[in-house]
Length: 381
Image 1 (cartoon, helix red, strand yellow):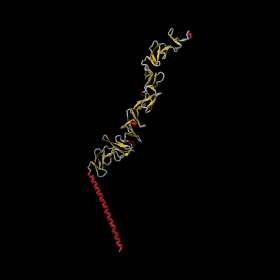
Image 2 (image 1 turned 60 degrees about the vertical axis):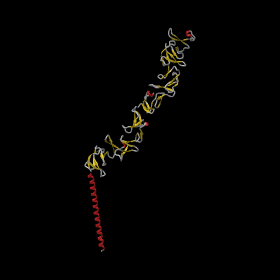
Image 3 (image 1 turned 180 degrees about the horizontal axis):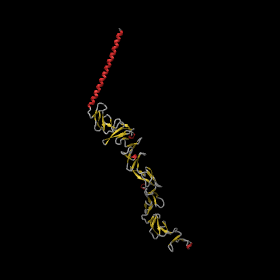
Image 4 (image 1 turned 60 degrees about the horizontal axis):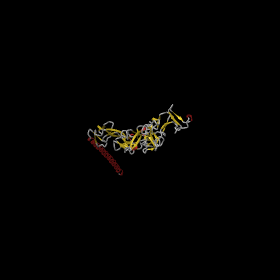
């Protein structure tokens, strides 16, 4: 009897399990049918020009302005316009996962977000920007990641585009370069600054104004340079920044194709010192004037030469002194007879040794030594 009751109990348990299984399967089938009916209902609410977006609920109208979409492709996608773009199921066409979408003059442009753009990928929250390296920021104007301040990214740092690099702004024409202060400068990618375009020019900064000066006579230098800021100087001159080649203190520069330095106290210069501005010598007499061309103090008239102490100006057109023009070297008169020699001390043309010789005109112009050969014993005082 007990075995019969146990058998009935076991049989009822199996029946109950079967019934529960059937009920569960029916419930699941009903749930799937309701979900499918709900999806069909949502899709059926979109028009023939619309698509269902990725969330399964939102209807999007293909061809909407600024989404770069064209006609509907199917129930879940629009055609892209232009076709080079990619539908993203979010309501617009863009450049895909690796490129940023820029709008230039109303037209879409794709920028690859790679090392060339200083980027490490597409920005997660902005379809029109790349994710930048380090502290760089996205620049839609430059179409790359760049420095936030007026500076350029040089691979490992930001170089400022300011007076320290002879620049005024970031270049909008060439990536990674600054716009130089003047048109005669160019960006040097090695030195990371603007330098003179002319290979024989150097940078000058005067009163905060930067310019390029070509090496040569205008700055009293040779036509070659030894750096971006200095030219080679002639012998005796040394380079002074933003000035050019200059003479040592106390000397005066004589400019020209072959610049030279003058020591104002040297013999024949007829001066006592350099002027305060260093551009001329101070003449030893008021009768003289500084002559920059000759590099000495000279008489005001071309027919005169300096003589005596104190210095006066002697006119070489002087018959009594046997002198005439032209003036030689600015310091000597021409003698009327080749046998004679100019003497600044006596201010005349005389024999080479006037203490022992006298000049005679006849029968042949000559200097005669006053000795026993002419029955003389010296010059008559």
